[in-house]
Image (tube, helix red, strand yellow):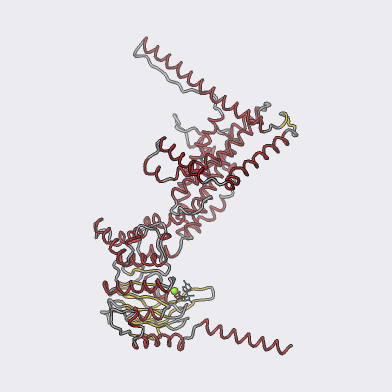
Length: 285
Length: 350
Ligand SMILES: Nc1ncnc2c1ncn2[C@@H]1O[C@H](COP(=O)(O)OP(=O)(O)OP(=O)(O)O)[C@@H](O)[C@H]1O
Ligand SMILES: [Mg+2]
């Protein structure tokens, strides 16, 4: 077991709240191999971001911990690069400068100036941003910003890439483009990736494994689905691949049959109450 | 006001930034700007931006003129716009006369010294500075230098303190009570303390700065500190959590973080504070000069008040307008600086 690349063992976390501690995660165990692409999927508020933040080192687990290449994680660091949901680029720096900030920090004494320039431009061209690399975030589209965010993470040469709903804020067409880019990059670099998503298709299309989380509080891993589709994957060819549809159905079943959406059950309660009040009114009439 | 508006686009153009200021270039820029304005001539815009304020100003002058002639004081009727304008011209003349006197003084001194040297090449020659009466414009200049000094010292202290308070909740909770207590203190309460401390501490045979200058400047500093500290603190503590996460993931050092993330994102709040500070500093300075008899516009007002001639009220009113105009100009300068340093050129600043 100890030869695993990234190990999450018995993680649980409690947040202090005014009404006492709130246990968000309980007993999360997950081992990830080098070069593996893992998706986290689950209903909103179950604790996906919390898991990611613990791996990133931004949160400290209450019990248990994360081990990366035999060393415990207890603070954030560039070997676990994060792609944030809302890109988190510095708005006063150009795309190039945003990547440069990361590259200068990570390769301070390892690369010469010329090598850094080349490396920055190389990473921006990986995400097809070389044509607009001197534009500032407010001058480029949402998809382009997210590309720069990915380029920044890639440029750090991280051991693990952590992506929190990287394409959540994008329209469907742009999202498909970004997924294709990610498949292409993944085929070339073979990074270890943990990605959070709400999108079942995205999860099946990109992942080697899909980790499905139960609803909170005290959320944990419900099921893990191994996706054995050959790579490189192509969304059009997969559309009527029975295996692909089987995986999709598995995830959907988990999400909508075994784990009811918390809001959905609440909405049901509300309509029930409405019905009662309507009945009461008609009685009075 | 027209002039300031005209200057802004000229001063912010990239061309000047990169290629030094030469008079020819400035003229070129100006003529370009004027041409642009003429080409984009829009009667409605013109009505709004010139005619309406112009009419309001004329109405103001009329009401002032009418009302002033009704008020009898111990120094005669309250002066109207015309008398005030006349006194302004008198003040300009007085200033020019002083300058001519000064030139003559130096000429005479040079001739005297040259003669002495001709008679005896080893003679010791003395050059004395001219010590004439400070004119109105000298007083404005003194006040400007003083307020600039006080404001600069305050900013150099307040911005770092604000940044540190914004970054560290511990330091914030330590300093906040002190800031809250000192913030509402009137400058006039500081003034006696500052005066006494300066006279006690600043003893030197050949002082570079006069004591009155130091006293006024330090009093301004004490009042300029607080708005900048408070605004900077708020600006820094409201930096987006995501950007701070980025800095943590990149393991940026403290300085890089402050320089690359904290300062750029808190610049708008910082400047809001600086502008409030400068406004307060200018008001405080006039009051301090009046109270302490320190050279400057405040002293000019006080001297005229004591003088009590038939022209005094009009001369004080000239000073009132000068104080207002200088205050306005200082704010505009801050705005130009803010436009220069802020990264978001599209933001509307006013
Ligand atoms: N800093 C915190 N303090 C207190 N509670 C928190 C904190 N962060 C998260 N939580 C709680 O932990 C639970 C999980 O939150 P988390 O953000 O991980 O959900 P998520 O699965 O990422 O949701 P979404 O899909 O909407 O992003 C939520 O109930 C949230 O209220
Ligand atoms: Mg989340």
